[in-house]
Amino acid sequence: MAGEVFVSARPVFLTRARRTGGQVLVTLARSVAIFVPVFVVGTFVTFALRGLSGLSPARFQLGEDATPEAIHQLESSWGLDRPFLAQYWSWFTGVLHGNLGTSWSNGADVATLIGLGLGVSLSVALLALVIGVVAGFALGTLAALRRTTWIDRAITGFVTVISTMPAFVVGIVLVEIFAVGLGWLPSAGYVPVADGAGPWLAHIILPALALSVDIVADVARQLRTGLVSAYRENYVIGARVRGLSPRRIFFRHVLRNGLGPALATLGFRFPILIGQSVVAEWIFGLQGFGRFANDAAQAGDVPEVQGVLVVSVVMVVVFNLIVNIVLGRVAPASRRGV
Image (cartoon, rainbow, N blue to C red; front, side, top):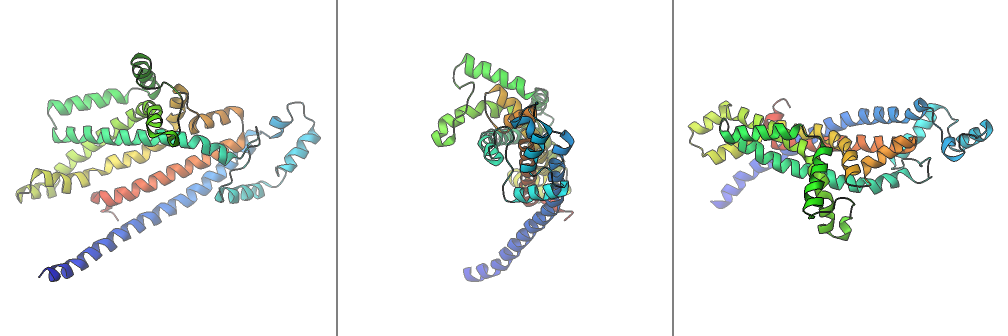
């Protein structure tokens, strides 16, 4: 009998597996179809920055008093005297192989320079996302389960207040309380995770908390809205009529179908998080990706700025791809139009 149940259940399992794999492939195909033109256009516009800026490596290496002959010779050595499309193609093929060019200011490899700061920024950003998702999920779920009560109103008021607080204000307050006042955490600096998980976490927890405030507010609001809306759907009413327990109704029907808006919010929040990282890095003395981008822009180092923009485009597109895959897998309501 058990064998018959196993045999009869196997085709159902395989059908579900094929369906899930097909949905993931469709999501991947759509994301790649969007990524390719976005990446090409983004890199083209990024490369056009040098021509639009009018800057030249001669400004960094020869100074303002350089002769036209010396400038022309140096630009020829960089290949800047070739046609624009030829320059772009050489640079674009290099980008596809991980070569982002050479810094005008110090001659260092741009990919290496970005990599040094990217680890710092990703550590802070990913921890901020985890804090924002966990706290926002807890607050949004509690507000939805206790909707129209004082708990719901208190959570709604709290997330409204914190959503108006800029990251740099939150960062300064956290430093004053936990670093200066209590002395529990360091106020600045960074320790690689290779030197110990404890010191690494101690140095990134405050900037991560400062950046997570907006994420907490957005996730909590969107999740509460999605869950309350899901509770009003006919399939939830039908589940109650069939006598399903509130726990099963919530996890099997309400949560999966109400999670979509909150997950979609993360796709919009990640680019903003990258932009806000420069503020947190200045406050907490971190040499991260955002601060590197700011320094490169102020110095007018075009290869560094181009490398920053390319990496930013890739990170945003990849993160949105992950969100879309999770959204399509977890939230069935998001797949109704597929």
